[in-house]
Image (cartoon, rainbow, N blue to C red; front, side, top):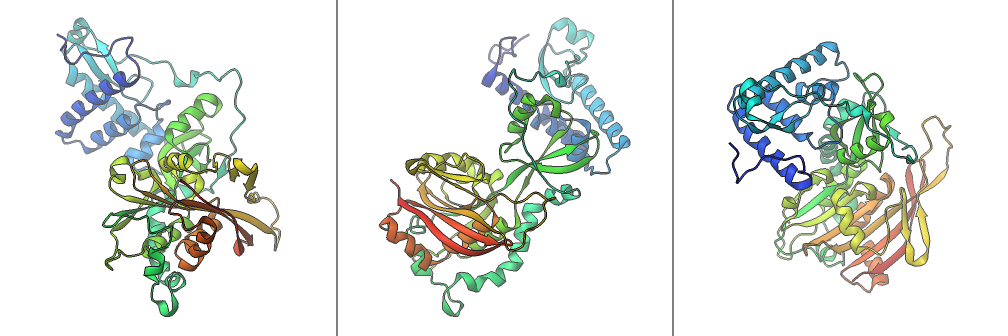
Length: 447
């Protein structure tokens, strides 16, 4: 008998209501599974639950990596293990709901996903078998397909490195920051803390307010040619999350069996070093006490973490994640063009020099230009949002050094009237990956 206060989803249920009913049932069943002794079965359930809203169901290779700890050597034996555990979980769900009509979780045959199905009383008493679902590969391409996405490929062997790369980068930074310390401080190695604290950039930090240093990171998708072994990881600024990967696959169905999601993110080493340096040189409170600060990757930044904290973003402009929205709302510039900063008011575009492809002969002493961005803004919640960013690695490192120099920040204040909210753009000329000059292109006050 149905519970009127908690009705099962009907054929017309869509959107938030259906998603809420699915999440509610997932939480209820998980509590039952958690009481059992099968940790692997619970991990499998959690993984399928996390992927339940994806446009494409995960494949065996993805489950093997995420649940059973497989790697590039994952073979048919591991795939067989996935099928066995999915079969057991499907049977466990059927036993749990046996004799109960109404809404229930099922794993459809032919797909590894959790869906909410409606079961009549006769079916519940007779035993309900999960239905076959049409193959997701039947997704149709749009009438006018968008241009193919150009991926930046990472070399083979990068997969295991990516799993803990953000953490490793911060560990490396912990050691190397010792060498960078004198460069970000005043004469004799003593920090010029008071001058730095009174600059337009840093004086917006609230008294007694914790600081989150957010390090930029990019979403990485896995690529396979045989649906079994991961060949490489790929980065593309237009695919910044698993949701965007699903959208990309819907419009590029030919890549359905080639691209996979392991929910991995990549933090460049220069970004990690820059974030560590900024965190280590945050100006103290006016009382002389050190600020409470921590470093988190942009992909892990949640509304709960942001509550009551000032945000200092360090990294690539393309890797800001959820912080890109408040930046776009407050800035007079645009950052939606890949590898560029656009100034609509002056009808100008600062386009970074693109790195040469791997198979292009290296041109010695070639000069390229990267662009950096610095801003002091107010986030929607009223807290400070400071942006220390670059289009590439060199500019990111340069802007991190600039942001910890009271003298350099004072030169910007001359052009902004020392207003508390401002933005500035810099051109960084490089030769062989090393910065050779830095030029201020724009500095303006913001409301």
